[in-house]
Image (cartoon, rainbow, N blue to C red; front, side, top):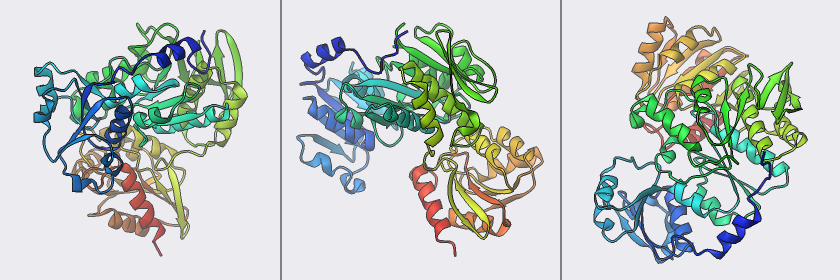
Length: 472
């Protein structure tokens, strides 16, 4: 079993001798969000001839493109970019660009290869690459892994679909570093050689069907994270999730399971209240499950996944123990904001799908007013409505956004009557305050994306916290 923390010296020497595969290539990047900007800088450093494109005009970006202004990069902004395809060696799309977009289809017609930011950055980045995907828990798990590897004495770059693109990490990373990437299904659509030494799928529940169409496609994309692995690599899977457990069949990498419900042959599990690692027949106790600082059964699963990943890379159990005991969690995920008049306000803006909000609901220990609703991703709210109905602590639901009527219908069908509507997040918070008594909670966990009212879940969470902190 390979348990080194880093790539060996042979690969390092070979990579340092080789010229960048992108030197002199004409590359068109479509989508100038954070990952597109970082990729443009990275490919310029690699010697590529870079053209960037976005449907939005220059002025719509504010100062976000200023760092590219002084570079010899061609800008094709405020247009669809199709005319810029001629003469290009590759089209590289950002995660927000659908794989069936017109420019993607045109590139394929012209015989131009199409790739994505994650794939290209992973070919350039130096350091040991670890990747985590799943419907829920990705941000918490990669952030926890960052804390574990830092405690192990490594320089850890926590990046990917977390707001700090892999391209940005690739600009800074060195061979002895560890790169921990949060990976989405959108990014995996455009990967080919993406090769993490250890990859994990945390869970798979219904999400993003407005883009992927079916659960079969969505699940297949999650499993795709393992496709470039070899027998020397590790695949970490949630044994308690049937869709994840089934992924183990046919994988080339060495499979490690994690489970909070039963023992596993290889991986991480809980026995007699203790987080336990079992690798190559050797068992090590990490810590008590109740010692893990981040609360809730879902975070126990995240901690088990992180422990299995870290152990696969040779991190000692005492280092993992220290991180599990001290890691405080991440912003916008069941984040305590403030207590006012005896009521606790909790920001779970990262609850962008049904399963994530179910986990937040299950974590509540006091009477709760719940804010739900947002952008429609074409998923069923019935499982969430059933969970709310059987959870007496959820005493009121205040609905906002495009999905308010859908959620109300699901709650009515489940027999839950305590439903209110609000036109804005401000109004929702004020209604929750009026509905709550001392000792209770107000929880923002929308079960939806934010794009109907906000730019992303982070903006939604920040605005929620501003509203709460300004309550008199």
